[in-house]
Length: 591
Image (tube, rainbow, N blue to C red; front, top):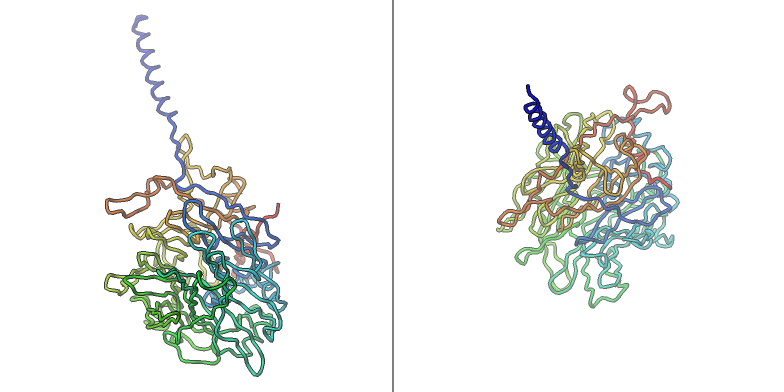
């Protein structure tokens, strides 16, 4: 080979190598489908939290949430924001009634600041909750927010009054609270319970609201009715402190679905408004020994017809102290300020607990959007793959005023016996909530509760997504990177709300390093707003939105957690499973 040929060949190889290098060095980075913005919440002396509850509309929404003094939510396998004594549905079964290991339940009862401390607090009238609203923290004697409106100037919830003169036992009196037009309205039960000459107080809470065309507002919730018994109060507030004991009777009142009519223009600031209750339950025979509950938690209006959604109660499943709740809707009419519950109905296809071969343990309505899509949940009474699963469900209001048959899209999805729960639905037909963490398929019966992660369900496309896949991205070399813009790593645990800008409000765990994140250690609890990129969703020619799946970046964290304990030697089956979330991660790390 002569010199000229050698030069040409060498140059050719060098050019080819440069082209390959240029291709390999191409920037392959992407941005996250959703960015994470930590809510700047004031510190609290309470040990657990902050936990997300509700947010307003817009791209920079107002937010509300909770701090909690004691952890009894782990004992009942509740997301912390569902702590609400008046909604007995959330405590239909204690840990021991959920068929997990009794030793596992013992650990959730006895550990420091766990459920046993909450039980003792009821004897002493000690506060367990503080609510935050943007940068303001309020005690439970002021307000515990349940729902915000368009912005932070309007919202509803409840407050406690610890005045011992209001009741014979140490139970606090509870009032619903509504805030509109820079006024605060006190929402009361129509009943002050009495028994054998003793005043037992009253109990009420507001959960949601709808604005009417004439400026008035209907507020829905629950309040006690006049069938309480003194022993309910005694057993709740002065009874035993057993781990499967008299706390089952808390809060000592029977609750009925209630609506308050508020006129923010005419009613003065501080006005006390008496609630109007539904007249009966869906299928329940009066039983003085039963502690029952029902509530209105959402509203919808279509073609001049008002609907209230929530849950009633049935004893088809079982009578006694704890009948089952069942998802229902009421058709309403108004005559002046008088509310009439004209009819109460169940959703087609959502079996009443106790019927249809005992299929469901309990069901309830969770939310409704402006299009008439209703979000519900059901707890199964039959086990699948060693778990009595929870499933989200939805239906919609048809043009003829009837509801479509219920859809349960995540029944045995993504695996047999999988759990899912819906918390909120927006007007784009997107549901947020939580499901079993994708790598956690442990047997629950005889074991422990599964860990969870935030869920996004797209009704329009009939597909589910893990919200954590919305927050990762690709680095310059095309590798998956889940470090957020602020330098931290996050596990989005419970998505509690989604507004019409598709912003998601959630409780998350924050980690300083990738190693901590991958091993789920050294976490701080944060409330976060997840904000979508401009191309996070696709919109078709009819205006229907769906998730842009090409923007998802999945990172499977197959974590090996240590759930064993040496507490008291070997307990449970082999080595007892302990939920690290309940005893470590969920605590707000002090700086």
